[in-house]
Length: 401
Ligand SMILES: [Zn+2]
Image: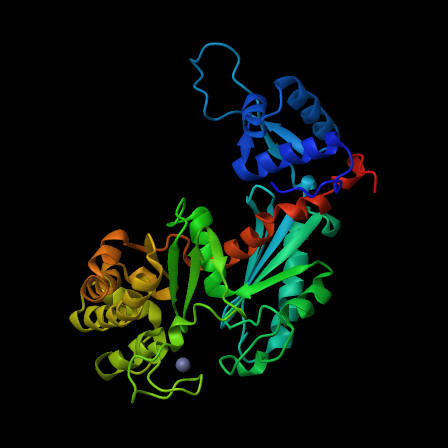
């Protein structure tokens, strides 16, 4: 962890933060694990742990890893109590809001979901999210003062400097300081980011991209977006627009797109585009669930349309593979449930159009976190920010501030 000199007051407080940070990263650890992870002596760790236990910030739990037949006393595992701090994750999809509260080890303590018209009614969506947040905090028994921050995922390009929702893609949200609006309602600092960016962060933190530093995450739903993780960090670009894959032009004289251009990838490979293609034979009221069932049942037209959607994405991502040389392309969003019919299309076009060395280096995988990815990423963006631990109730432990 990075510490500015003099920021935390005493050395002892700095060491307490080290122990808390090690538990945040590992989830659970024994006292000797903590000594190894922090580089502190066992005696020092034991003292710090009893101190933190006395304050209710660390609790003991039985070690499930140790077999009963093992010799000697099993080591006692420690974990952070929600009293040490908690985070809120809020995902604003096109038609839903999902809210969860987690402890600092990323364990979700309570979660709620509501369907509503997020795209068309920003104020109502923000109010509903604040209400859900109050609900999950009460359900988990977490006091608002223990929450170190809230992450917010929104399906729109976000100007990282001004903090406003940009462009024409989500007109009713355009120009709204969405993070500030939510923060005012929650009375908690909010970190706002694009949903594909936070989905990417979740998949590299907990999912299909775990352990990888260079990943392109493609979200295929009602919209299409990409989240780029480069050198282990989310890449936002100069003003926060990086990864707007859905508005890469793939058919110069194609259908008019909601962004005002024509033939964007989104007009070809979004769920809406695929459903309307199948409408001709399966009816105009075909739902996404029915489309996925048709693919699973081996319906030729459904498989063909999904594969073509995968190909269109793969063609655009092949160029990204040349530019960025990622280790994995992770396909998430509602369509990822279509499985190989979709992924094979992505893979084939990468192999066909990327430089062989770039194509060989990249694994094409389905995302594993499903429709919770964006919410989990919203939690991760808060929890991964070590500097926020300062507000995690550690200041009263002796900071000379
Ligand atoms: Zn477009």
